[in-house]
Length: 112
Image (cartoon, rainbow, N blue to C red; front, top):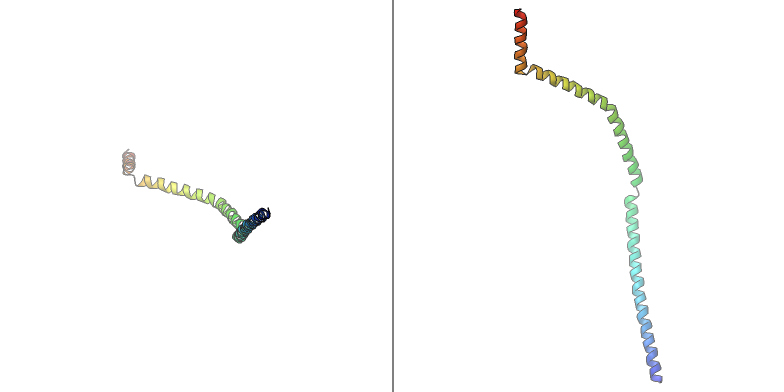
């Protein structure tokens, strides 16, 4: 009977040591995970810390670009119209068929 009590106590003690060892490993794993999360948080904070100011600067730049574009839009339209007129005049002047017709009509008028 005494031997069975001693063996039972040893088994309980070994099971207790086993649980303590598992808990120690679990604590170490949680500690490593916490360290990794802290490092990730620091890196994220360092990376995104200046983001709001950068976004505001970019927003202001885009707003200024749009304002400048709106001011230049009428000038661009005028330039397009001028180029269209120049192109139309050029096609009239350098079109051989049209030039021949104009010469013929001019000579007919002169002969009348």
